[in-house]
Length: 297
Image (cartoon, rainbow, N blue to C red; front, side, top):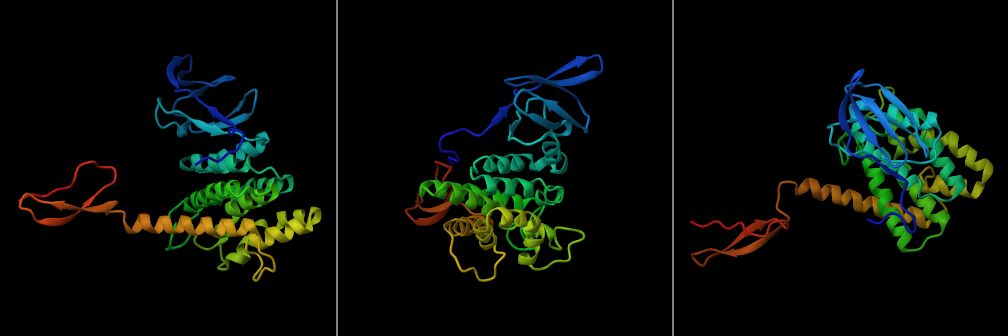
């Protein structure tokens, strides 16, 4: 999926690390376009690095193998905020975290980008969002599914917004809505030990409410649009194109998820196969396979 119109996302590609031996023992040596770093092997603490373009936080326990290649999306965050992202996000979710901030970099409308960054940099949001479930026992009920589902919807929404040539503010609103449309679930009882809320509308207001007030002070019309698109209003008076796109992307994502679950142990399609005896039987055959799954007596 092509996520960017005219520019590539800010990506820093780390070369494969080399294990060497130094005065303090083994260490990983990484090379990047602008600088190189050294990380001790086996340590689980975080190391803050200062490069020419950005500050990157890595944890050495994220290095699954000496031959792994790390790709980190970089955005214009302060050192403290960048540090919080990688310290509070579970290591298996680093790629999802990278996807989130790549999508944030596509938001060009200043007030919406500021609002989204404030929400995503909230320590409570970071600590819960990337390990939250999308539901208690329905779709997306695994740890981390809420963030994965949100990124999926945002990618589809971005593609649709680009295709229909929405304005910058509409495209930005669609991305903010997609990434935050279910953010309130982090405060529900099945995602938070102290969660006692059962209403998603109440929960989402509890999460983004303080930051929405800041939007209200700067742009009341934008505040109303966010309230409507984030489902904070029971019966909105205005229909927004951004909201329509996100709802369509959400439905597609859920349908795909349900199909994947329903047909997890089933071949992609079936074919009619004529056996040696001339009988026509029905056999399943996967699209990735070139040969028929024929059964002969």
